[in-house]
Length: 341
Image (cartoon, rainbow, N blue to C red; front, side, top):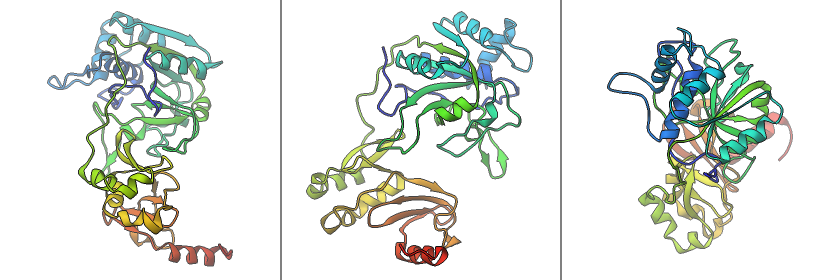
């Protein structure tokens, strides 16, 4: 049995790609292509032939009459194709008990195709993106992990990690034009409540053909992190090396992660996290913001991470990280609300 990692996701590599590869009803082949790639631990697309995993499954299903010319299929056809490709499967219909059944299959090492009858309502908490479609009804995506609820790494409600070829994050707008991800790795996170609102009606577990074991090593530690953690006082305060969303991270004594540019800033400024500032722990992980400073719009969008004594801000237009003037922000808020902090 392959158990979920502490993050709630399955071990191994998970491939995520856009549904739209010349056809516009291929969410079934798309989901099965991602499931089979995971189950083989190799991407089944053929870059040399210009075929995605979605296209490979679509061609197989068209050749056997399991999908119509536009790519539309049903769970029965998808199971028949998975079995023909040598994969063990398990199916169930109806929404009663769907969550517990799905978690059980994930804990057995399977990925789970799900068919929401109201797919338009799905919303990714990672990117904030909805669906790249309108009036989306019967739809397939792939559940690849489960998270029980808020923890030190993510203050998110109970939900599932998913690979969804119709989500806007898998079909991003770049320089004003819609683009398509092919063989990517960024997952979507849909809450249990969001999945329930999508009214799922059918499920199919696809079991891997190969043994997939959880990784037992962390990514190589960046030199900047190592220098920060080598400080005896920092180490004594419980800081350590770990990962967040699969990337290298600094984890403080409360178990809260800081990663990417924010972590590099922290590593370069240890004086803000020891001595008189030993209690300067993060209030939570980094958060994306459409406006990083509501009282001062000049800095635009980006991300913030709030600590007990300060707030770090990443301004995307300025491409820099800085310490926010928290006092100025507080005064502006008090003037706006008329309530003293």
